[in-house]
Image (cartoon, rainbow, N blue to C red; front, side):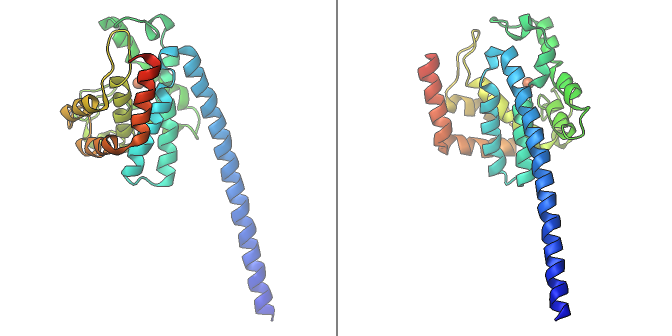
Length: 230
Ligand SMILES: [Fe+2]
């Protein structure tokens, strides 16, 4: 009898510990999410040109991440990093960030500081540092010709390579005063052309497969065409 009572007590104690830890992790995650949301609102307030850009990049990145069988933990990290990838633009002067025309070479050099600035903004927090490291690398290119550190191939964090593809797809399909938006098919061709130079070629193949089948992405494109007259 006493063995049974001991077992029940042990199981009950284990249950209490697991529940406590789950609540603690959830609370920590909730706080982190709150901070992340505040930061996202700040970027959007500063840069109306990129309004909704981060949400779309996040959606595309998550679709690619799921197709690449990322774990739940990595999907969560990917989501936060995708939403915050341009946080460093807070440190870029408004007249450059919101310039309606094409940037001069000098202005583009200033814009290129935003991954480092994003890293510097987030690196001070232990919880946000993993996101900071991913953000730092979202403009690196597979062949090493990207910035800020010219990393190549697998030197670039896996999740950063996903964000790079999602970000580029959104830029290619977006309307800008200096460029017309591309269709899904043209954007897919652009991504294909840059396999193993700008992008991880295997990831591009998976993403193009998603683009050809995914109705949600097609709906986003159609609603943007109607809204922007694109
Ligand atoms: Fe960026």
